[in-house]
Image 1 (cartoon, helix red, strand yellow):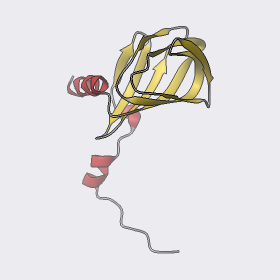
Image 2 (tube, one colour; image 1 turned 90 degrees about the vertical axis):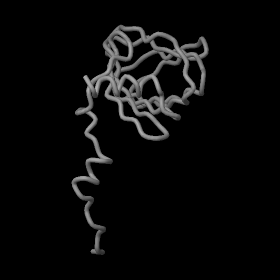
Image 3 (cartoon, rainbow, N blue to C red; image 1 turned 135 degrees about the vertical axis):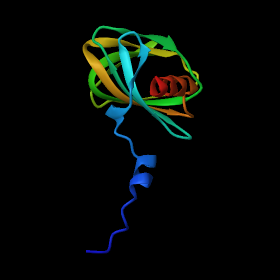
Image 4 (tube, rainbow, N blue to C red; image 1 turned 120 degrees about the vertical axis):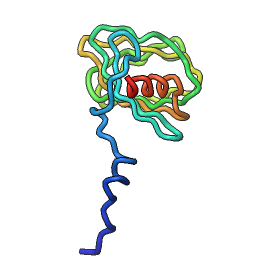
Length: 130
């Protein structure tokens, strides 16, 4: 076996690695909460939404990729419904109006935003200092 690179120091590791469930939950909308992780050029959201809820339509500068991990929703985008289920990935362009009707199974997803969502970064900072 080839020689491996040295392991990162504890300080280096703690600078770059976080266990997302250790990050405080932030409410995105009623019935929808997320663990948020943000970097210089993107924001990542580990979102859980309660069954039979509505995520209001909105828009933002950031492009978004949504990866459905469990449950499902009818994603609203540009006034049309996109039925999503576990394993589906949808891309949402910058400034496109979108929202969701969450199924009776609830919804778990990973969302990626680029550039970072400043509103979510502000919620994260507030949660970390509370």
